[in-house]
Image (cartoon, rainbow, N blue to C red; front, side):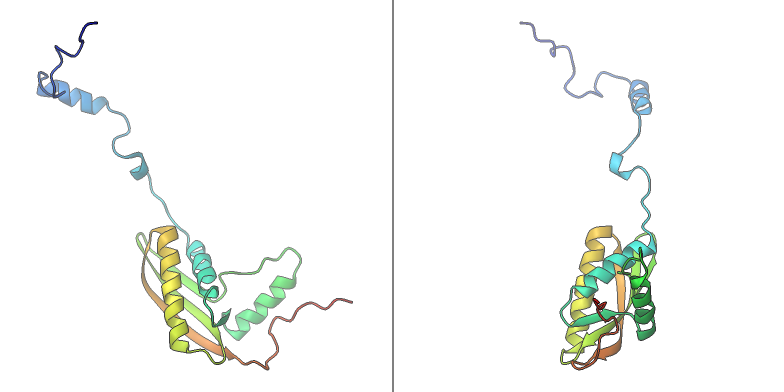
Length: 161
């Protein structure tokens, strides 16, 4: 068996002139890591959905949005083919690498609003940053209502006849 590496230099750039190295690098296709080729944009609606779902997961959050938006949402949900809006009560401003969120929530009576708001922020920031790679610079929370135990639901269950 013959050793074919004997005449090759250890360093590929050794033994070649600068011109040969330039030709080799210029003929290389693509250039750079394949993951860095191109651009990814994320729509505001995508971030709003992620944030809305993350906020609803927090114990003490009864609903999202103001009374008016919940009423319109309840009507829209009853229309055949209409989907439940997971982004209701969420507004996102998405930039190249950062996002800011405004959330409007209804909390259950008896819970600490400060604790619920803190948990919502933590959950929303974690979910949005993990799923999108965007930096969440702020999560503003407006508590628009408190759900009392004896109040009727804004979105009653459909009656069976």
